[in-house]
Length: 146
Image 1 (cartoon, rainbow, N blue to C red):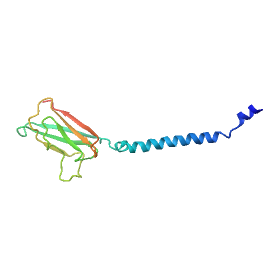
Image 2 (image 1 turned 180 degrees about the horizontal axis):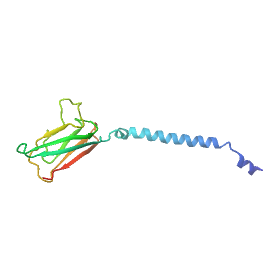
Image 3 (image 1 turned 180 degrees about the vertical axis):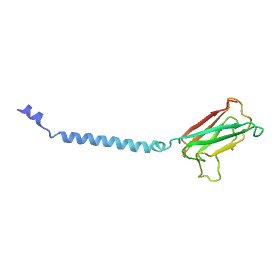
């Protein structure tokens, strides 16, 4: 008779489920708080924008030529967050504007004169850096095939 009562008794089910739920909630809370305490929560929102750029090089424009970079499509990007880097690229090459809060939108271009005439294999990159400076990404890479 005692064995039969053991299988039909269900009073302990509710406290066991309660304990399991409390442990699960504690683990989830600890994970969420831990990500923000360790600074991982800030990096979640720092993803590179999706944008496409085109490049053209006009050798006849002057002694070193001119490179034109055009934002073809994608998100508008703050001019303070992107830079132009690569072979023979002057430090002044950028999508710059007097307004530090301006954005580069589709259809806008930047023109710069390289430090020296481009030769085959020279590379130019559009680099995006996050506002905190902890993350950067190459948005577009172009290699001159002169």
